[in-house]
Length: 196
View 1 (spheres, helix red, strand yellow):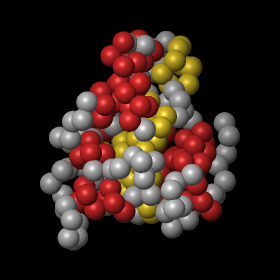
View 2: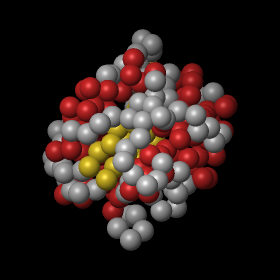
View 3: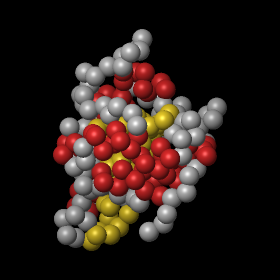
View 4: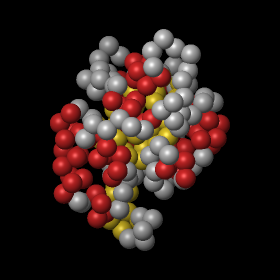
């Protein structure tokens, strides 16, 4: 396992980390911790099913910021919360990006806190990095392939998935990229951001 070293490219950078409901959410804890250690301002947004795998309190402790789990939570701001977060973020990471989440984003749904925030992000200005995580059969479904192709065309970026041991006791493609790979690609995306 590769260790993580603090990266100055994250210092002072506002980043939204979206967590959807998959076992790989445990890896996202390491990503959020590393971002916080590097000085990033991390806001974690969780789907309802994500909270079944890792608690919001875990991400709050790692990020030192409140975790968004509802579309109806609002910070004191002139803009609606999802618009404010989308405007402030210098990058958005979705990890894990499950089959369901990939499908929702590709088809323009905006009825949970994560998809709502993503609906307000201009991917031409703000890099959005998706880290897919799903069973090999789910990854190879024609619908998933179509959704990935559509998101790529729309300007979303991907890290992984990798091959390897999966929670369903099989070995194959669909395993979420390791935290250090995600952090590397996220730093690269931020450094390439227009007006970075």
